[in-house]
Length: 372
Ligand SMILES: [Mg+2]
Image 1 (tube, rainbow, N blue to C red):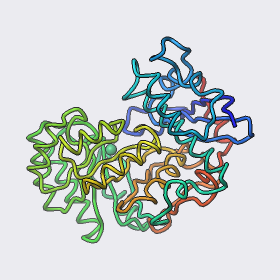
Image 2: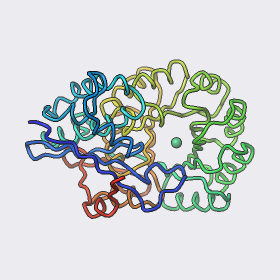
Image 3: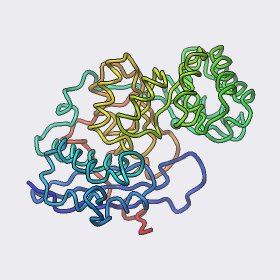
């Protein structure tokens, strides 16, 4: 069985706004084989930049594009092909955008393997410990407090047991951020979990203030209050904050996550399967998390391709209390699959079809296809 081509399809909303929504444009991957089986993957980054990593011709033995590395290879040799991509992109790769593209390809290779075996992906990853998962409603903080509180009530009424608000104006006035959380807590009651996602860093002293002040409102975690590169700052913050600290959506590779856990003292990490190095690297990170008794609660804010891939990964974990679920209105999120993945009463189920267990909606692809 051989890979015949890797097709990179850029999808983009007609209007892309400067908001914290990375699902406004995506790179969809289709890995084609001579057996007639096609693997589906997604890269969650910047599609035009990603496509260059996919399409680039040989430059040197350590700087080659991904397609030319993989065409002609057996797609079932996932570990070997992961190493080949990593080794032959080391000059420009290892972290960041090259790892993002490797992630999408890795997801598609696992989809192929599952389809060859006729088994849902979670079976190939060791089997599901749980097939249903609590989703937390993940939403954007709104400019007005009233609008954010209205969304909180809506998510509670839809059956979610946890919700997160992030980005927007958060971080410009940390005392105002605490007031927002207090209002959300008052609106939804004591039984639900609330998370806060800063999106961009605040000064360490402000982050420590937030960590202490938010504990009064029982915030489940405070996400990304510091720069992704400020690993030493995270160690100080974790030591000072009674509110658990979470980060990792902008990090890539096992090495980055080992650093966050061992030097940054993080107890909750959030790898994104479509950025971090794919399903393969997410599983390796999960093993390291488990050995340190650290929780992995993946970042999952994109299309249903990522939701499916993440569900297969978290189904195999011993402990994953929540799965992030993007609740914003966006056709790339809601219309990309023939059978969209939707929570009921805040619960998501891992797909049972072969591979990822998903089928793309070709009309949606045609509608949002973008040539750059
Ligand atoms: Mg986030």
